[in-house]
Image (cartoon, rainbow, N blue to C red):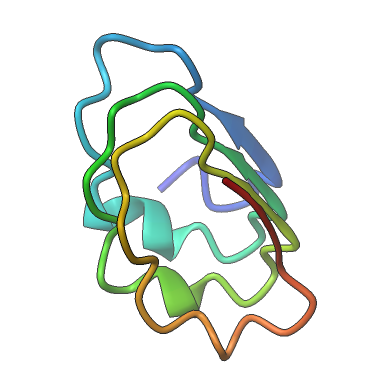
Length: 79
């Protein structure tokens, strides 16, 4: 879609976001993803497809495991 060139996405503190959709994993150029304060319990299973992602903010969520993010070399995660 039209957002495929997006490099930064901030959905922090947004009551309308209860979970991240799998479609966020199709944003191939995404470098920064800010998801603080959403009460997320899980992340999309395809997060490892975000190979350009260098920063992921997950503070103030309910996530117990981020799954397999090993393919994302250099990723900094803030919890």
